[in-house]
Image (cartoon, rainbow, N blue to C red; front, top):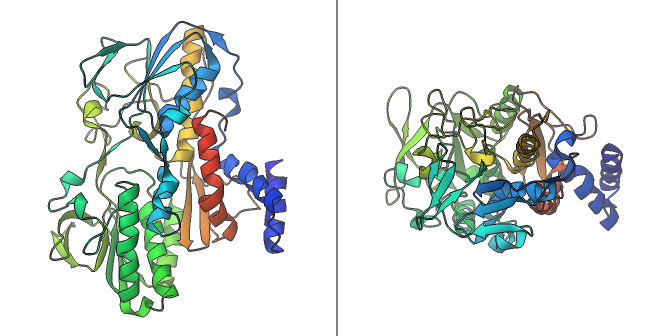
Length: 450
């Protein structure tokens, strides 16, 4: 059904007849497919329970978990804890920084997505006590639980970059798309000024795990296109600094991006991680295998290191050893999101210590799986729900075109429409899905309807 619907949309696109009905089909067939959850996690009947369930974090993962639990359980006490009153549609930050959307496009409120019967406590969790089965908020209030879902998201660690001043984002050629809607818009102004004049544009990703790892690549492509549209590409040098030996974790996607960067004259440096910055001098210093390397710039898009929030990092929940221990990612089974040492604790979204999955599409696949295992525990049963690492990246390659990259833990490409949308082709239909169709499906995900 989905494939037939999307095929009709693509036919309409080719004939320039994308009417409202076709667009709605795209929203249902295209974006919906990217966020579809395993059927086994959605088919369970509603269960009566008096279980106390605490969800730490009310971003995309926390709200989706609250909505899914509210739909699955009858009588449970579900408590959602988060101090932030605004809800940010983070997949839209790149669009704001590209000048495609205004900052209000990505801002709503947390309360409007909290389902009936779920209590929202507008505080931050200051302490996790899995031994005592409780969390403590900043006011000192303790909240006991029978089950805990940690969905705190991650920390943007700008303070780890000496010389970085977030209040200067948007000034003097300094950009950073991740900080906030306001700073994404400020980044757009800085990048637009650069596109008017040219110079040296520097792009990078951190040496840590990060949310939406394709975003730095997208913004490099977007900047290149703005320069070309203004006739200034010949006046600019664009440099992308990869943190390791690849541009993308999936080898075939790395090779495609490498080829596109080559065709468009983007210089690539490998194994370079931003070490410090001098905003006044427009000078970035990168750590490399041969020592520090200085790089002058006229525009730079800073992506900070990303780590688990301090409350998580300072708790017993993170990995105790291995690659995810340093930055505090939570030690969960990568297939069911259950904690390895605390059976009644789950982690979903960015904070989960799994090989892939720091995207909104991954959240939609993770949450039903984690909830199904939680509900099965309440019912005294076993769940077969399984998360395979599905991650989606609509990789914008120029204004009006994108590649729809979908993959799993094994770096297999997992296209939703094989033979209809080729994952490594720059397509207008993929652009439409990114810029128009995904947000409505995202909102449905928050409400537990997608």
